[in-house]
Length: 422
Image 1 (cartoon, rainbow, N blue to C red):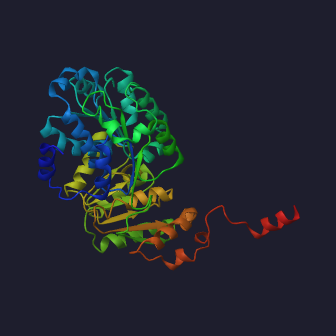
Image 2 (cartoon, rainbow, N blue to C red):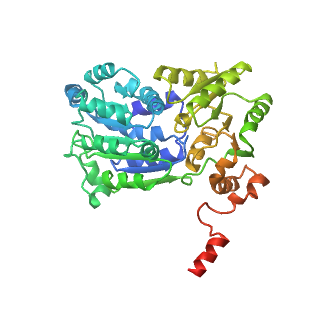
Image 3 (cartoon, helix red, strand yellow):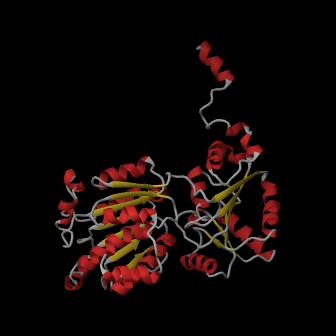
């Protein structure tokens, strides 16, 4: 690394690289495409930022200023505004001292103001797909010299229906800098030949926690001979989180929640619900009982969403009641407890929710309230809890009829007879 980047790493206080950083940074510095699959909270942001900043630093300053109207060198796409802003914070820490300008382009904020900042020129754009297309179509932004693209939380982007948007954005990129889809795309010496010039091959980096078929499809279309980095096991929640499950009726949930909170909980704590209205009602109820609660969901304006996260981070609020908007990628330090007041709809969402605690090497606890409506998850939930070294599967889940086999795989006796007669 150049000395100035090492100085910033030192100043920010990072001592040791995390496993994903050890693997992905050297590959990124060779200008290769990467698919990084790692648990949440493992330091993915820096794994793609450092090779990027390294390359921008290597370009002559004059070049950078003269071609500000040609658009940014890099685009980082994230599924939610909160995540985009979190990446921006991290980028600013490193970019500002180096004179590298970043603009964040997300919904909920004034498009004109974002357009104005883009016109002033910037090296890195961090964006959510919807607003980025808006800005591209209205010509606030061109991508004539963009050669580094990061798709963060790619699986979540596709879950949210952004696949056509991501493809559309990638079509705005210049075709001239595409890597050849041959062995050359794996040959570091060939790739490095044009590395320190603006004509370097396009580099695409994709980070994801799970690999559904749609993500593989994107990867096949846009990545050239990528190196795949697996850290830990795919889609498994962190091993340091104790998972507790209570099976109950809908009416017992509130009483159980009060019982848990009255024992005293180390703040901050996150309570997940499935509906926006449910989040507001629960938070109001908690406020009446004297708890410091705030809410985060898609029905809130951007300022309210930022305020809720900030107040949880600075300690003025202790409890965040949230929908799945806060389920992925959001990094709040030292969350001691996650409560699934409403159980997640899918087992992947459950994994991401409980990944808000036990981050960056710390331990955590996740308590889930399940009703008979969640029985389609019981089998997978039982497997996850049994695989966790710090959790114990409760007998009522262990012996529950729906936890004995994967939904849709069992042939009933009646069905078997029908088959025989047929």
